[in-house]
Structure formats: C-alpha cells, structure tokens
Image 1 (cartoon, rainbow, N blue to C red):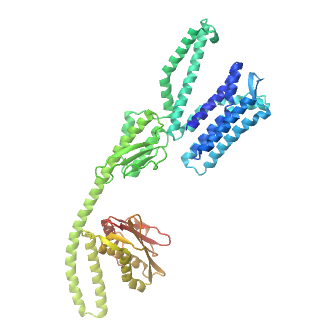
Image 2: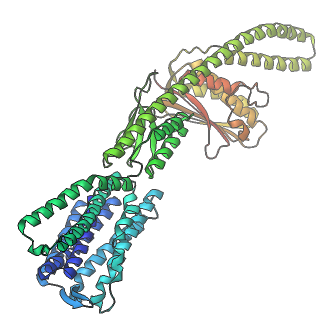
Image 3: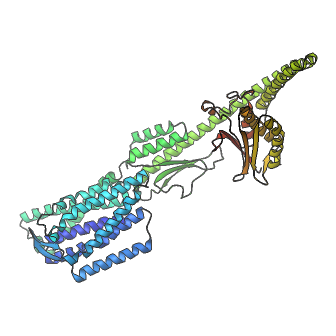
Amino acid sequence: MKALALFCVGIGLWATGQLAINLGDARTSELGKILVNTGPVNAVFFLHFVLRFLGRLRPASIIAWYAVALLVVLGINIFDMGSLLPWLEFKRYYIFPVWGWIPGIFVSGLSTWAYLLLLMAWPAAAPKKRGQILAACLAGVWGSLSTLMFLNASFGIAIFPYSVILLPFYAVLLVLGILRYDMMVVNLWANRFLAWLALSVLTVAIAGLVLSLVAQTGFSPLAALPLWQLWLLGTAMLLIMLILERPVRSFMEKLVFPGAHLEAAVLSNWRMQLESATNWEELGAVASALLETHLRQSMPVLLFHAGAPDSSTAEQTCVICYRQQAQSAHAEWHYELRHWEGATPSVQRVGAVFGALLAAAAGRLDQLLRYAEQEKQRLQQAHLTELGGLAATVAHELRNPLNIISMAAVSCSADVRIDIREQIERADHLIQDLLSYSGEVRLNCQPVDMAELIDNIMAQLRPTAMANGVQISSDIEENLHGHVDRMRTEQILNNLLSNALAMLRGRADARIHIEACTDKQILRLRICDNGPGIPVEQKADLFQAFKSRRPGGTGLGLAIVRRLVEAHGGGVALITCPGWNCCFEFYLPTSP
C-alpha cells in the first residue's frame, strides 16, 4: 500500500508546484515547474497500486514502467516542454505547446489503463472488493476533475480554472472512499497522512496569524527579519506543532479508525451478547456483527475447533478463535488478530480485548455443549438400559406363547399353517430388533475382506431380488479391506438392503446399486435404489427409532444401523446421488 501513499504525496507535490508557479517569485516558479513535471511518475504510482490491489503485480514490469516514467520526466526537463507565461489574472502559468503534450498523453494513457483494469476486475470481484474498486475509481475521477481545468490555458480556453476548488475535498473523498477499505495497512497510512496534513494546514494558518500580528507591531516583512526573530518564529511554530500533534493525531485516528476507544458499557454489552450464543454459527455471527458495528467496517470472525489454522486459511483481515488440544476435555481457546499489523495500537488493543472476550465466550459455549452432549448420552444410555430390560422381559414372555402357537399350528391345514408361520416369524423379527437396538453393542473388530463380504451378502439376497424383479449391481474397489466386526457389518448391510428391496417391491425396472471404496483411510459404502425415495417430512428423524417404517418393517432397522455404525466410530447419512431416488452412505475404519 506504499504505492497508494506515494500517489497521494505525488498529488500533493503537483498541487504545491502549481501554487509555487502562480504565487512565488521567478526562482520559486521554476521549482514549482519541476514539481509539476513529476506527473508521469505519479501515474506509475497509481498503476503500481492498482496492480498490487488486483494481485497482478509483476516486479520486473513495474520497475520497467518506473524507468520509462523517469525518462519522460528527464526529457521534459531537458527539452523544456512547457513555458511559464502570463494568463488571465496570473503572472505566470504553465502552458504546454502542441509537441509538449507527449507527457500528458503518457500520464492519461497510463491512468486510463489502470482504471480499465479496475473496471474489468469489477464483475468477477466479491461484493466487498467491488466496493473497494468503486472507491478507487471515484477517488481517481475526483482528482482528475479537480485538476482538469488547469489545462484551459494550453487549450486556449480563457476560463478561470474553477475546478481547483474541488481539490481540497480530495482528502475527504480519500477518507470516505479508498481509506475506508477493509485493509489495516491503508488505514494506517491514511491516519499518518491526514494527521500531518491537518497539522500542516493548522501550522500555516497560525503562521499567517502570527505574521500579521508581527507586522502590526512594526516588524519588517519576513524576508527582512533578523536572524534571531526568524529563529524565535521558527521555535514558536515548532512548539505549536508539538502541542497540537497529539490532539490532531487523536482526532484523525478517530476519523480513520472509528471505535478505537472502549467504554465499560461497550464491554458489558459485548460480554452479554457473546455469552448469549447457543451454537457456533450464532457465536460467529454475533461476534462479527459486534466488531463491524464498533469498527464500522466488515470484520469476519472465524472459529476453529482443531487447533490454530495455518496462514493460508484466511487472507483477509479477520479475527480467528481456535481451540488447542482439540481432543482434550479441558481444551483452551485462544484468539489471533489475522492481518491486523497495520492497525494503530489503540485499534489493536480493541481487537485484543474483543478477542479475549470471544475466547472466553467460546470456551464457555464449548463447555456447555460438551455438558449437554454428555447429559444427552447419559439419558440415552439410561433409556436404552431400561428398554433393554423391558425388551428381554417381553422377549421371554412372548416367545413361550409363540412356541405353543407354533406347535398347535401343526394340526391346522397347510394354508393356515403358512399364515401362522409368517406372523410368528414377523413377531420374532420384532423381538430380535428390540434386543439388537436396546442391548449393549460389543464389537470384535478385525481385518475383513470387504469385497468378499459384500459378494456373500449379494449372493444371499439375489434369489429374493430376482423373485421380486429387482436387479442388484455393485462397484467394489479391488483389495478393499476394513477393520470391522464382520457380523455387525453384515447386519448393517442386510438392514439397508432389506429396506431397499421392500421399497422396490412391485416396481418396474427396480434397481439396487452398491459402491464401496477407500477415501483417506476411511471405508466408504453406498447403497442406492431407484424406489420412491424418502419423504421430506421423514428425513430429519430418519435414524430415530419408530420414526419411519417401511411396509412390513418394525421401525428399528435404520436406528440399529446408526447404533452399529457409530459403535465402529463411523457415521451414516442419507445423501443425494444423481440417477438414484434414495442413497444411504456410511463409513467405517480401515485400520484400528
């Protein structure tokens, strides 16, 4: 961002040169002429800023442009491409002949190119960057318009250069436009530039007042002052500047860095709102909104649960809050002000205080969520224990009558025996599901050839599938192995495939597809079908017990699948796959 600061300095030198030409003596006018002639270098400053801003800067290329600009400036001064002549009310005015327009063409062409680069980048830019591009263009257009009428004399237009009246407002536009970028480095340079600019204006005004008072007391004009009087005046001006420096800098800091000061009410409000968050998304949104309101600029807040992110995670100015020792129950939360290096100490202090409050709120929320999860697991385990005891009692009490009914059915006709046998099997299946869901899951994990396991299950189900007109296909990765409990994994696959077969019964062109592969040391399996799919209202509670029930099902199949998969340390979900109406995906470990 130094190129932008140099561009601002160049604008100031150009304006100073114009004033020196019109208000100074012959020698001062020549010095002013040299300052005005530095325009080509200033155009390269602006191009340098634009290229860096857009991420298209090439050091060799920009150095070449600086070299060309210096050659143009050297040529202007050697060949004297302009004259200081009387014009309207001016004793001397910088007027360019026809052949002296070469530097002007260079400056205009380079500036136009820079603006075109900004405009071409605008459509693809993010919303925040679009605002930055617009601010840069508006500031440049304002500066160009404010100096445009200085060329009236060269064009032979006898109109006073009124546009110079706009020049003092350029600094205001700079603050409201470019300097309100969400970039701390730019704001730092703005703070320094505006503080010294305002200090210089005040010093000149006070110097004028002092000189007028000195003149009324009988002192000679400034040029005729004795050495001791000049020394006394210079010392007084220096003392005034030292006295005014701190309040002026403080005022400019408030202008460029709003919200740099904290009050007890602000801290209390921050703490209350941060601690009111009930989840991570809400905490991040509340934190970002609080900072944006206080600093009056966008400030993203990023939360990480697995340690500090690397430097490439966030390239923009932001606040990062992260948890160390992610697996520990006593993990500590820390904050980091990413890319705040250009902020003033007071703004960094605001960020540090806010970061500390955010880290404390994150730690509190983390602890509350852990306690809530532990309580949920405790209640669930207590519920399963109670349900397990009930299921064991029900199983014992039901199986005895079922056995008696089964033996009594022997004397019935064949049709009646078949109906009775189907209902007994259905009741027994429900008992088995209740025991599986409510019982303790014990795993005997060992290396398993998953391709062979899946082939066996498909071979067992294929007769039933063919009888119902269902085609089963598979895409199994070669040498696919997992570290799983073989019996429990077969139960998972059988439950999912049985669900798919039940939903496809009686449908034309019914198909089931099984995929299995490894993904980053994880065994990933998918079972997809082209059945009716899952109703939207059932998706939220799909894996809860008795929430969804296929025809002839118990409502426990998917709940059992979830328990068994999570017992392995994996997960299961309903996903969307192109070409399939229903697709379940679950993953299991490939190693201990």
